[in-house]
Amino acid sequence: MTEEAKVQASTQKKKVGNRKVADRKGTVYTLKAKIGQGGQGVVCATDMPGVLVKIQTEKVLEKRKSWLRHVRWLMQQDLDGLNIARPVEVITKPASQNGYVMELMDGLEPLTQSLEKAHLALAENEDTPLEGYNQTGGLKRRLLLLKELARTMANLHARGLAYGDLSPANIFISESTEHHQLWLIDCDNICVSERGGYGDYHTPGYGAPEIMREESGVNMSTDCWSFAVIALQLLAHCHPYNSGLVMEDAELDDGEMERAQEKSERGELPWIYDEGDDSNAWIPGNGLPWEVVTTQKLRKLFNRCFSVGRDCLSERPDMSTWADALDEASGSTLVCSNKTECGATFIYNTALECPFCETVQPERSHLCLHHYFYNEDALSGESPWISTPSVQLLNLDQKTDFHLAPLGTELYSESPIICSIILRGDGVFIVPAPDGYVELQRKRDGKAYVLDRLQRLKNESRAGEEYALHLRHKDEAGYSSHPVWKFVW
Image 1: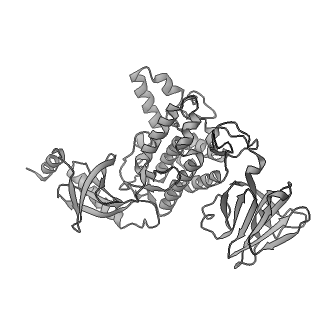
Image 2: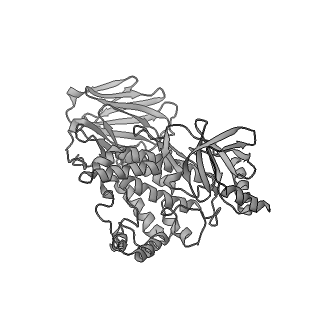
């Protein structure tokens, strides 16, 4: 019997009970529940906490050897600091079995499982679908999860690598809706990003049109496409092409459905929110209206990706752009004050109306801060104030750190914390960081006070007066401009 025939016979042999495999160091793993499966193999939990094993299912010998070489190459790549469960060891026994070991923290579940729970909750609350949406974590958690995913992908791309097969099955998130941890697994499609890429493995519904048309392999642009599909699905529970009129009309005819599905995957349909073609317009009931769960900036990014970016790859928003927009959106959410019947998080609007329950929020249930830059070298006659569209919302009993870099940029979370602000029932508390130089300026008389310790503005003094919070770093002099947060108290 040839070696290839032996491999095929081994993979076809019926398995009884839990299988055992071993890595090259001799560590033995008992394979337990299957937690994921893709085109190249099966991911299994093991008897060791936080340890997963992927077993390759490819039967062609040359492809098996090529895959193993790629895994060994991947083990040598710099993935430090990324939330990616990378291969740490290669499975060597039994000899007929290709695979690798990866480590993943406990308390996570596949995004596919979370989406299924969300769809079920929406279906069970058909008359009040937004209630089901909130039961599965609400809007802010979804925005934070997507921000984590976008940052991970942006940092991977910055190293010249593409992920290759981004789909909900390869994304693991916190089981608890109170948390937003996110990790990527099954990363053996990671490759040096180029038009040809490494292979063309993809998950149906998430592959970019150029892959489906066999015009390209995986690369950074195909990653960006897959991310946008996942983002729309997680936020609005709809697909950019499959949740419109075309699929609805094709449902009664299997042949028509198959043709419509092929057109969708090849990028031959207008997207459901296409501004110039409503022939495949979104149908109410297929998920949630996107204006309820997205900001204007996010809607522009989705439109760029799925309209002109469908055929023009350079128009697709990159992962850093997505991360910045999601960061900004998550900071613009309010918590509905109607705690007993709603308690949802929603995007700030000037009417202060919760779209989930239509409750108008009390003015004192939150604090809205608007971001500016103050130009210290403004020309004569020129205003030193430079406004930005960024807004930061503080909800009651919420603490927020304010950094030196501009909000909504990758540098923001990495830059020094200058101060923290806490909104409570008895006032707003401003806490300077040890390295922060913080000035509180009152608009009425222009006076600015340096804050070197905790400062409270009492709730009783909340009379509609405008303040500006100037932020600088103690160790850096010679600013030409600095960030300022304006608010009314």
